[in-house]
Amino acid sequence: MNERLTRRLILAAAAPVSALCIAVALSAIVLLIAGSNPITAYLDMLEHGSKLETQVDILNRATPLYLAGVAVAIGFKMNLFNIGVEGQYLLAFIVAAHLGAQVELPQVLHIAYVLVVAMVIGGAFAGVAGVLKVTRGVNEVISTIMLNAVVISGLAAWWIVEWQAGGEISATGGRVGTEPIDESRLMPDINSWLEFFTREVGFGKELTGMLIVAVVVGVFYHVLLTRTVLGFDLRSSGANQHASHVGGVSPKRMIVIAIVLSGVVAGLVGMPELMDSGYYPSNPVSGLGFLGIAVALLGRNHPAGVAVAAVIFSFLDVSSGILQVTGAASREIVEIMKGVIIVTAVIAYEVVRRIRERDEAAAAAAAMTNPKVPSDNPPTAAEVSV
Image (cartoon, rainbow, N blue to C red; front, top):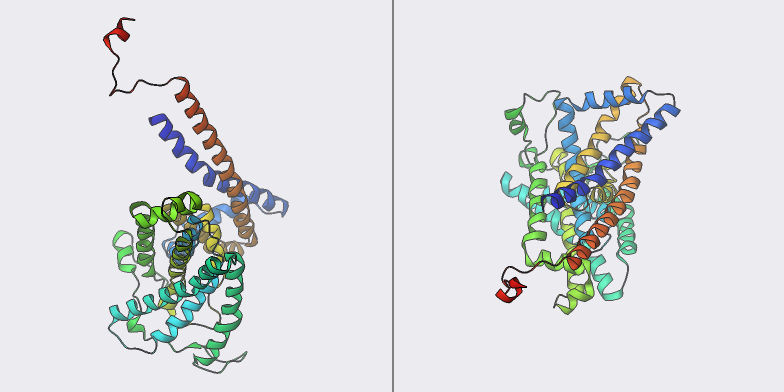
């Protein structure tokens, strides 16, 4: 049993580790072709990433990436491809920023109010795709892509004009964005928590308090899927809708619930930026929803795996800037590494899946060939004598 468990653990780690190693090796080849020294480039990135201030930046970047990854992973558990996380979090971002500036509540209540608004907007907007799928058979990939366009090129572009504060929109104008939320009502940083174990964080770096929210979301996601009836229904329906339907689980209901939950988490993706700046800017951080797909894929939809994947992608993003400073390589090498990681991860996970199926088939064949006598049915005296 211990050997089987060890083998399963090795197989679980083999795919992401091999994907990362292959990405590093192939990127090194690209660097050599471009005339750069890969060892120098990698050492510069590692040295930069080892600094406490850089690690704060990495965690700040990883927080929204993790939330985006979990949002996508929830859909994946139901075999749903929610590619609309990008539009869902941007819509939740701008609405929460605007409504958050319209009220004055004590800090704790104000933070809770803004987060709840973001989750409700994200879940409701994602629910549109779920309803379209179960009532009209519209594929969620198509509907969420179209809804992304509705938000990015429609609602957000319209409301940023309607709700702007701080100056007119122009090439040389001042800050353009929604009316800011008072700083005293934003989520405080958690530098003191980090400094308790390390040292004082310099250069004005602040570790976002949304990191705690992301951890809570990850724990909730794990408990929901592994310790609740709803989580079991979601996973079983995602694995085989027909079998779960026979067992009394409505596939349509599970589809709507899964995509709404995905949107609820997606609504939180823009909150780290909102809690830092206090308003929705004219150029918010974009692309997090699409990166969340890669994070969920590399993390195999597991909360711990998604966290590791988010940190890896965040490390690549943050530490790549040092390459331009040192001149060791072009920072575009990081984009190459990301692409290679995703491609090799897909291949590696398929190889691991086939190995597992082969092992399970071999174990089943061995059990059929050498059946063990059940302990609750001991042999009779006549059988022993024979």
